[in-house]
Image: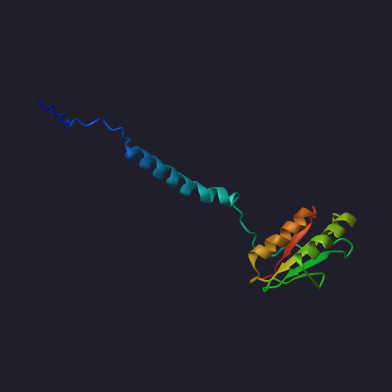
Length: 137
């Protein structure tokens, strides 16, 4: 007599995770981050002034004048300088007199990043009297 083993077709239970709720949660987080990111980047709302401005500050005729051309060339008091040289010169001027006014003139087509780099250098040396020079309408 031969005994055969019968294979039963009883399936074992499988462990599954319902992915629907996880996908819903993922999309909810994505939408939340997309909506809150612009608010985090802007920070403070700024209303730019209109009309005539006051005269620019100067201290006994002394001031630093920084010009930024549309091609990115930077000049300090009429002499071309690199950002490293500007950093060193601003450090020396700040050491001598931290209250000296700094006037920044940038071409309207100048790279905004370059203007911000110059402003960062001025702030780095704690030169607090800074003005962005514009022309009147």
